[in-house]
Amino acid sequence: MSAPSASSSPARVIVPGKPGESATVTDSDKVQAPNGTPYNAADVTYAQMMIAHHAQALVMADLAPDRAAAAGVKNIAGRITAAQGPEISVLRTWLSERGQPESDPAHDHATMPGMQSTAAVTELTAARGADFDRRFVAMMTEHHRGALTMVRDLFKSGSDERLAKMAKETAIEQDIEIRRMADLGVS
Image (cartoon, rainbow, N blue to C red; front, side, top):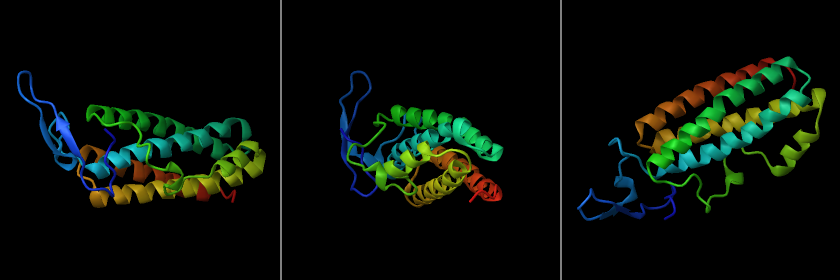
């Protein structure tokens, strides 16, 4: 079964019964997590998209130690790695606990807000020194702004309180990092 997308109507899902009980069929937006908290298609889509989004940020951040000239760029890249790697793990667990796949093959991750093109990441990979710093700050600022857009979309449509709390923390971290990157003066 593919995960529902936030823009689609609820999918019909089979909910297994307890031992000795029959399974039931219901709409995906009425399914609850094992701990009883409700979640919906917007929550699932957010978690799936943020895994891919954070993964690209990690790719870019992992380039900084060998390519950046500014210590501030290296420091921010380190913070991104330290925060977003564990967030990916939490999102994977959140999806797994709900029987949802980590990714929706029908979703084009390249169209997510703030995602950088393959060509731009290739150019960043080739850059060194001050050129890398400028590209990294510009690309990561756009990337973080995209994540803030995704968080706002979750707040409009999602229903899982745990995921909303995590998204709020993500928004705070990324907003702070955007300001720190602006303060570096490498643009």
